[in-house]
Amino acid sequence: MPIPKKYRFMTVIIAVVAISVVILLISAKGSYDTGLPRKIILDVAAPMERILRAPLDGIAEIWSRYLFLVGTGEENRRLKNENDRLKNQLLQYEEGYLEGKRLQKLLALKERSEYEALPARIIGIDQKSLLKTILINKGSAHGIRNGLPVINDQGVLGRIIETSWHVSRVLLISDGNSNIDAMIQGSRVQGILQGTGAMRCTLKYIAKTEEVKEGDLVISSGMTEIFPKGLLLGTVSRAVKKAPGLFQTIEVAPAVDFTRMEEALVLVVPEVMKK
Amino acid sequence: MIFYLVVPWFLMIVVVFQHAVLGAVFFHSIAVEISLVLVIYAGLRMKVLRGAILALILGLMMDCITGAGSGSYALVYTMVYLMVYLLSVHVYVENAPFLIFLTLVCGLVEGLLLLVLNRMLYGTNVFYDLVRFFLPQLALVSMLSPFLFKIFHRIGWLHDGYVRSFERP
Image 1 (spheres, rainbow over the protein chains, first blue to last red):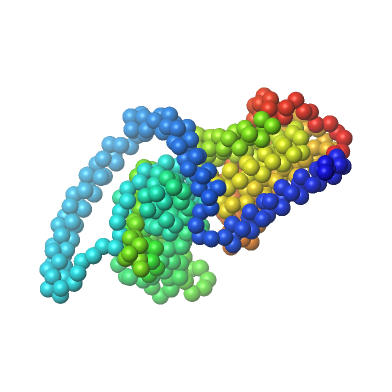
Image 2: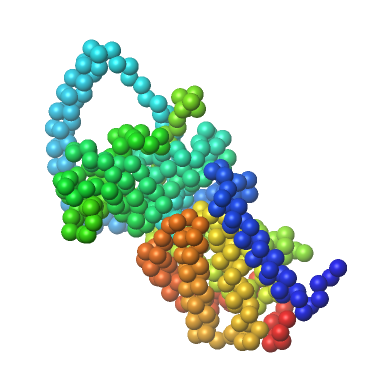
């Protein structure tokens, strides 16, 4: 039965708004897994995005590697100095590591790593919308599932929140929805690292009685099953005790430079071990 | 009929283009939300059914490609579409300053709805993100809206020669 012209507008609008509301409610209360339509769109859109971005990425690379070299000499000098300092430090740590290995053998402790690192390429970055995410070129077909941690050579990037067959979305630690169990490496004080949405994080629930200073390293505490213990999350950039309440205000600069990411490692926990 | 076959693919290209290409042009720090201008265009110039379906599909594409919860952008875009459509039966928007103003208002409504939805459904406060990222983006896209309108109008199958009259539907 055709709808009278008088009611057509209202009928169409009510139908469309109702569909949106139903989808929204289903997704808000829905399952942890990515739905089939989203999987299809992600898998179709990712190659499109890669093709469209390829020329721009090329230009950006030429610009950053060959043209925009202001401050490179200064940076090179600073890195050489840092390298010398780190070499000395490494030597000391190597001694400690060997000592630890000897003691481990002595106590007959079995060394084991529960995680397998799966390399992936970053194919999309989205830091300008409400959700700070990146896309990687590995999906459920490669054994990736929601919740797995993602790192790179600098530190922790985030965790998988959505997977299609060949593409996955990673929620960055700088996003406001990201909460990670963390601790200060030196003092072993534990708190929750939460993203602020602007390439910064805050370390919450650290009592004012604890001594936290600028430059302290923040690592994962391994309290939850998502992130293994000891992964570098960032560095304390500011710690203030003046705010009212029981806890300090601690700002953390993430270890990863989110503007320069190319590759990532997904830490896959084999199902057998998880059980 | 061709409209309903072509529109999902066209909208996917629009969203991927704005997400990947325009995002990269502005060093991933600012997004030019041409999808919002397309929704406003649909509300002002397209037939009811076509415009509503376009707003819904565009919203769903945005949800999938930006990673937002399914239905968030779909609901926001249909609400913006409804608002613009109701305005269009009273006013024929043609001059550029009014179009810029309308885009600005619609963008603010979009931001407000996203803020409320995120708060209600996911318990997250995106106010800081909206102020830091959304407002500069909105200013930019508002300035570009008259130009984008001309581009959309050149895509003939979008409006199919239809010109909105002042009569009530």
